[in-house]
Length: 64
Image (cartoon, rainbow, N blue to C red; front, side):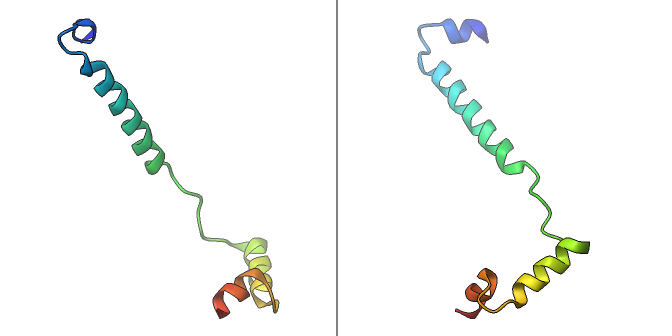
């Protein structure tokens, strides 16, 4: 493989490998786990209270 990269008859091979590495990095980033959207305990109570406050940021978006 290294010989192929150094071969002058295939100048685009190194570029293609670099592009594939970028694509793999992007795919890995997309597959990274996301933080859980489920809240429990005190955090759930705080979010519920925030939703009930008139003029709260979530309430404004929901009522539009």
